[in-house]
Image 1 (cartoon, one colour):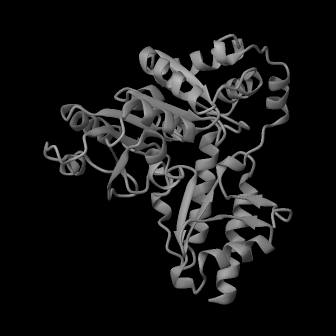
Image 2 (spheres, rainbow, N blue to C red):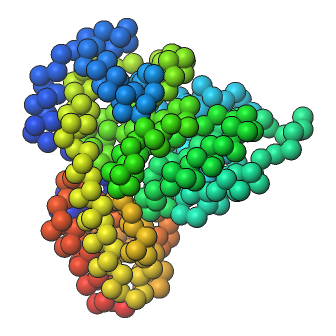
Length: 349
């Protein structure tokens, strides 16, 4: 089913390393990462720690592993994590929060993936021996399933203040933190400042084949490295992968703005069909979420029809769909995908 794909907007995880990135990978100096002897991995970790304003950082195979490591460091079995109901740690990590950290989620119904300090305050439990200890507040920057929403820095600060007052730690799932930083003009370190742990993904908009890097205090990263080892995350001569990350930080960050512009173009064209539910003005970064309930199509059926024309988008609900722009699809491809989507809807509605 995937051989016919010409325009792949399923996810920004579909990016592939460029020739220049592959060359950087091939030339990387390597060593044993497990005992801190890989110089390229060490350099990447230093770069990300500085980028996020933290003492230290840890290169891991994936963002999901970053989240699971952070949960395991921050929480003990039976403790509670507060997150938005759309959060990746709640919906898309195979129950890892419960299976690995032994923690449970208390979710908040935010607006487009963003909850307020007042909502967090309302989610705090009264102290009682029958209640789980609330240990961690987690936010996702940007909010993926909500359509790539940027958490405003003011709300981040207010939420952090409530969490600290309640004695809770703070974690940021920063899979697309750099998208937020590029679009808002606010430094990633400013967004990251209130958090005990924060990570960025390399394998999404930055175009790397593998990896994510998590940052925090030196003590946190020391504990995180132990959990990483427990989860089988040692990568040995990982410098070839780390070199891709360094290349991406040098070359692929500013261009994320192009993805954001392309996403807005997709949404603007899709919104021309009155029966398609999409708020083009609300698209901030590289994710467009749209509902086709009023078109007569289901999400899976429409996705299959688009695939006949070589266009792939993702389905995240019975009628809810998602298109994600990235560096492997230029503007012309995004426009073609959106126009094909509109044509199919108009032909059948």
